Image (cartoon, rainbow, N blue to C red):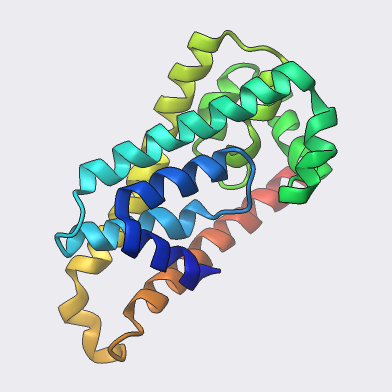
Length: 198
């Protein structure tokens, strides 16, 4: 999956980032931890603009989150746990996001957008609670910017330091190495968060 996502971003650039990140914010199992850093690597090589990568990823989060919000506000958990199961949405995903929402209220949208796992599903309880749409939009954007900026900068920094680390990485294996590093670090962070929640 990592290679396929990386190839999509490399082939279609900002359009791929827009579609994939919107899907991620709709609850699809698409890791932003792969999509956005690849955009950062491409920005480092001059194929994309770093600011555009961050902006498009944030816009995509708003679009995908908005769709999740509207669908949940209109049809409730039935659509999430019914048809939603076919795209990877599980009850525990909704429960994690709902717990965050119950704990932090509408600020959960802002906080949740900056956290692994929670960020993908936080729009669902926001839709169920019918958070005022203006507040939802503002909190979604403000919360998405730090996450997307961090991921894009990871890719950008690693991309700019290619010459320094190329001797340790076979030609053609660079992207894989970057993706593995990013995924491992963020997977560790995600595990720590889950332990803290448990």
